[in-house]
Image (cartoon, rainbow, N blue to C red; front, side, top):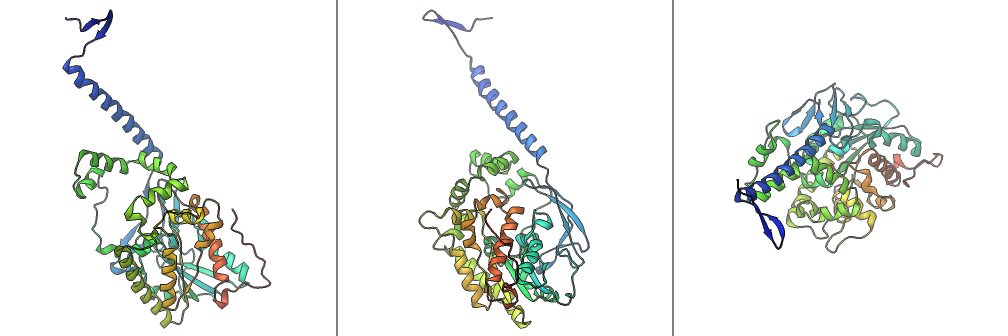
Length: 393
C-alpha cells in the first residue's frame, strides 16, 4: 500500500485522492443532515399539534361545529384549549335562544379572533367584556359569541345574519382584523381542497414548480418545526417582527400609506359585504358597531410610534371608520390605545398571530373604554359605577 504522505520543506503533508475529495463533502452533508433531522425530531416531539374538533362545511354559511359538542385543540405555541359548543354550534358558553328579561345583549360576530381561537374561554374578550361593561354602565350586560373558528369572512357573516338576529341582540359588535378585509368575499366552500394528512413534499409538489434546488431547500426550511420555533423567538422582538413584515409585500399591503390596487379591491369587497350586514341589522332595528383589532405588526408600529416612509399603521383604521359610518354603524376605535401599552406585540402568539390571553385582556379593556365613550346610550358610563378599568400593564 502506497504512503499518501509527502514531505514538503521538511514537513509531512497529506495527499488526498479523488475519492477523498468526494467523500469529505458527503460526510459534511451527512453530519448537517443528522443534526438538522435530530433538531426537527426534537422540535416535533416537544410541539404536539392536534384537534378533536368535528366541523363541516355548510355552503355559503362557512364552517360549522357539531352542535352540543366539546373538543380540544392544541397548536404549537399554546396549551391545549377546550372549546364548548352549544346547540346552535356557537362558542357562546350559554344556550342560544330567547334573551332573559332585563338583559342588554351584545352579539359578537367575526372570524377566529372573535371566536377566541387558541385561548381558554375565561380569558377571551367575549367572556371578560360583559363583566367590565356591567360594572361600568350599571346595566346587566351579556355577550353572546357567534365568532367562527375558521374562514368566518365578512361574506359568511352576511349570510348568517338571520342567525345573529335570532339571538335577539340589543347591539351587534363586528370584530374586524386585516385578514377579514383581505378575505372579505371568500367562501371556504369555493377554496381548493387539500387532502388531509398531505405530506410536506406533496404540498410542495402541488404548488408552483420550484425554479432551483435552493427554492426547494427554502420551502422545506420554512415548513420545518425547528424553523417555526426559531421564528417564534426572533419575532418576540417588536423591531424584528416589523422589519420581517414590511419586507414581505404580500403581508404588508394593509400597512402602506397608499394602498395598491389589490388592497383597494379588498376594501371595496369589504364595503359591499358590510353593507349587507348593516342593512340586515337596520331592517331589524338593531344598532351595529364595529372595531378593528390590529395585526401584531400593526400594533407594534403604533406602539413604537415610528415607521418607514410609505407606511401608515393607521391607514386601514381610517378607511374602516369611513365604511362603517357610511352604512349607519358606530365605529369604536381602539388602535390609539396600543400606543400606551408596553410591548403590545407580546400579547400575541409570535408565529400564529392571534392574540393570546393577555391580548384578549387588553382588547376587552380597550373595547370597554371605547364602548362607554361611544354614542350608544345603553352603554354610557354610569356616574354611580365604580371604574375598574386600567390599561397600564
